[in-house]
Amino acid sequence: MLIQKIVQELQDIPEDKLAEIYDLIHYFRLGLDRETAQPLTVSEVEPRTPGLLTGKLSDAFFEPLPEEELQQWE
Image 1 (cartoon, helix red, strand yellow):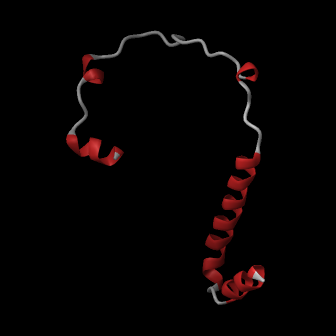
Image 2 (spheres, rainbow, N blue to C red):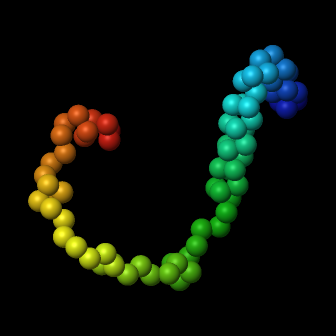
């Protein structure tokens, strides 16, 4: 059975690394729970009101990003 193979592999992992494995398994399982959750329908989502913040953006906001920063987004 697959669970037995997983347990066998876990037994060969050093004790000081088990916390990392636990976190991996735990958050993976939580992600699975989120996948099965039912998404909200449009009627259940509250509408957002744009323009709540006042102020102005400087011209620098609209300037292109440096190439180095653009590469980090890819």
